[in-house]
Image (cartoon, rainbow, N blue to C red; front, side, top):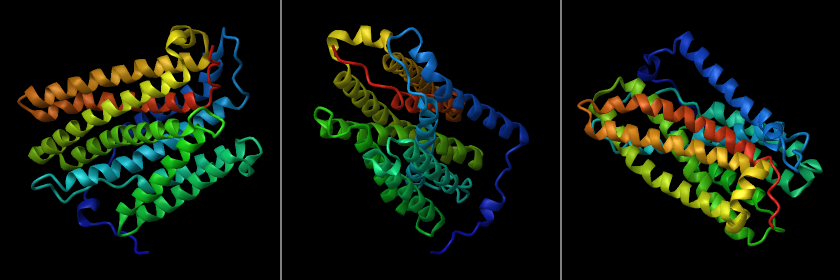
Length: 316
C-alpha cells in the first residue's frame, strides 16, 4: 500500500507554536476530567451507584468518539474542498492516522473491561471496532484515504449494536437512531475542526469563506438530525410521564440534561457564527465563534462518553 509523501505545500505549512500546543493539551486534560470524575458526581444523592470502572469506561468511550469524529470530519471536509472554486492546493497535515491509533487503543481497552472480556457480545463488538480503526488508519496512510469511510462505517454500526443489546425493547429501532445520531455528530464536530484547520492553512481568502459557507449549510442539517435522533432516543429510555423526575433523580438523567445544555450552547454559537458569516463585511469573522463552538463540541463528546458508561434509568 503506497504511502502519501509530503508535498511542497504541506512542507511549507505554518507551524503550530508552543503556546497553541500547550493550550490544546490543557483542553484535552480538562476534557478528560469530565468522564473520569463524572460518574461519581452524577450519582451523588441518587439511589443509583455508578460501577467502579465507570470513569475509565467513560474516558475510553469519549476517546473513541473523538477519534471517530476526527477521521470522519477530515473525510467530510475533503469532499467539501473539492466543491470550492479555486481552492488552494495547500492542506493541513492529516490527523486521521493518529486518531486511528487512539480509536484502536480505546476500543481494545474497552473490550477488555467488558464483562467476560472479549468473549462477550460487548467484547466482540469492541474487538471489531478496534480492527476497523486499524484498517481506517492504514487507509488514511494510503493513496486512497477516502476508503476510510468503510471501516469507519463499521465502527458506527458496531457501536450502535453495542448500545442496544437484543434484550432491549425494539433494539433495531434504537440501533438505527444511534447510527444516524453518531454519524451526524461525528461529521458535525470533526467537520468543524477540519474546516478551521484548513482555513488556518489557507490564511483566509475567498476560498476560505466559501468553504465555511458550505460547511455551515450542511451543519444545519446535521444539527437537526442530531437533535431529532437524540430526542427520540431519550424518550425511548425515559417515558414522557416521568422525564422530569428521571432527569433530576438519576445519574443518567443528570448527565443527559448536561448534554442538552452543552448542545444548546453549541447551537447558539453556531447561530452566532452563521450570522457573522452572512452579515459581516468579512465572512471569516465567523471563525471566532466557530473556535469556541469546536471547544464546546469537544465537551459534548466528553459528556457523550460519560453518558454511555452510566446505568439506564429504571422506567416507572
